[in-house]
Image 1 (cartoon, rainbow, N blue to C red):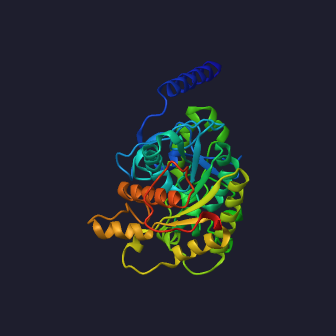
Image 2 (cartoon, rainbow, N blue to C red):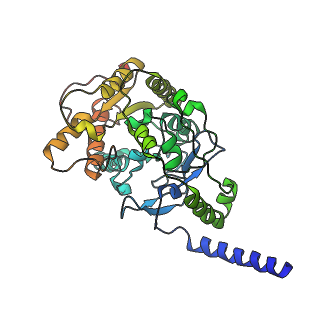
Image 3 (cartoon, rainbow, N blue to C red):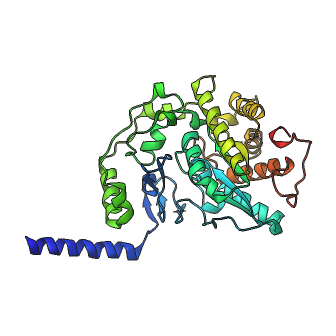
Length: 365
């Protein structure tokens, strides 16, 4: 028995060394393999540092996570002198689901700023994490985002931010988050029961590649996909006044205060969703977000008109699915954001764009 145990330990040690030597490989995998639970952090979960993969549902797109746990290059902390830094928070839209890293709007925005004002040293840090909502974004800003010393915080809004996040927190990413605080739910009274699956302790996952390999297999084997009712509940637009909107505004106010505490301005980017492409009437969601910003003192960039124009000019939809933009949609969002920020004086003066009309100053100035 002692010999057998010794042989087993030796075999496992060799397997661990091989896995570490090989490192992450861009295998075709599921979305949850890019994430890890973080019960030690109020933001609940994040992208797994060093993860590399192609998802079964998005073809040849490569997802590579840096050592800090984000789909981006690493940025110096503290911020280098003379640098103007933009931090982007959001969900899978900011993360760049379905497009290459360079085609996600934060990276397109950074590239355009570099072209327009190379001497200004402007960086755009993408902290987008799939499945996040306003609660996890606010906690990530307080814990991690401020450490990047931003001059500007851009928060990406998606209509599913107002839905019960169970499917997004669990089924689309981890399925083993355990106890989630009611504060993470737009309407806790309608909170669904989260699925539970066995899992190896997160500490073991961080220490050993073997633990990650076994845990991923265990999750895949024991996980049930959400049913149709759960999926429908996770995508139904919430347009009427209710607790969801009050929850959202309170968290946006919290993020605006946190940004202000470190000397940064706060801007909300209101992304439309696919079913809004039909028709020309104003939409209550965007109107409510704009009014919220005017009331509470931040800029809201409404991207719906530009997306509708793009959809009308092109035979192809600017969306991959319900709400994820294509590469052309991401590029459009970056251009519209650039114009809005520059025309409102939220970027260094060296960034010059043609402003078609007089815009109100940011933050009620």
